[in-house]
Image 1 (spheres, helix red, strand yellow):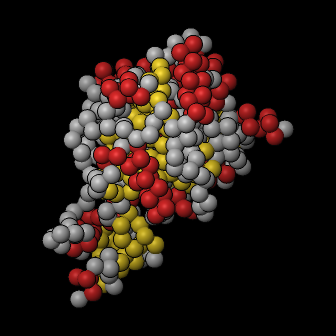
Image 2: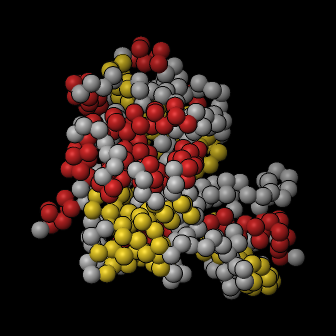
Image 3: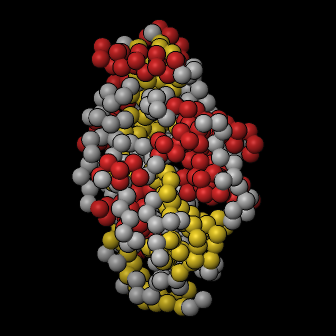
Length: 85
Length: 393
């Protein structure tokens, strides 16, 4: 499996090609999805495109991270406060 | 990433409930189908549906094949131990005015003449069937045999059965176009350019079917229609007992259809198609917001019918895209070059027809296990994709 570089919240990240984007987010941006009450980090919810809980910006458009696979040069933005520090 | 095979006997494009049902029936008929799903199995139209399984108010011409489809769902639940919440909770069609009463009585009389167990309910009888439906309702139609399934779990159950019967089903395997050689289908071209050879291809890609077929010069009269659903926070079991629907288009939320039910999880689900919402062609590939006007009128309708639910918290809303055909019937059968088949055009109610359509199409393609009696010929006449080509000619 080949490695690719993606841009995650402005920082280059190297990962395997064709991974579910949620896998990269959980490993490299675990704050990407948070509970509304305590702001605690959360994983995937439905994982199949229905709940829209994992929406992030991919190449400028809202996308469900669980339906997106990693590819070279993709730009991902979670826009979470943690990502801006 | 999964390695794709280079060839297959039959390729099914689309892993929603329709494509999965086609793959299951093909595998059961002894063909070795390869099913290719662009994203997640049941993650688009299927998972966003409320999955009612019934014949009530679906039109009389399809009654025979639809009743058989309901039998197939019942039998499938029994055979598999029902891991997908198949529940025959019945369906109530609420009536708000004299025009609706006339329409409801018409449906009931015609369906009863075909053997359906439906009947009319007086407001007093309705109070016994659906106690919290205390809004200004004049009466109701009642179809005690209409069921629901959990759309996610049922899709997974069909997928598991299809694989057990010999089908190969791959997700995140987007098909971009069709291969045609000398007037015969030759396979599919994947989004990454890879080619998979096959002598038969079934397009079961719902509102995406037209985009895939267009490259091969095959125009399908399917248009995506935006539907939206709401889910309210979990309520005690039995809060809403039946599927509660509008009689014909008289739902209170503009036109289109209304369907309210309580899921196995306890959430109250509310699905309405308002008047055709103008959406750009790529809308179905983007994340869409549910129109706020829809949310507000839906809440008003729910509170009008079920006043005691007026204060329940709304949990979430979602948009899905149904494939609409000009006469609101599926396209199922041969289309375009030799070896190409289509099974799409759910018009918002694909779940109840899916197992029947799978059997029908597998019967047409392989000659094995067709629908019983005259139903195979009925389905051929009802769903022939070429009915539109003939009209145009």
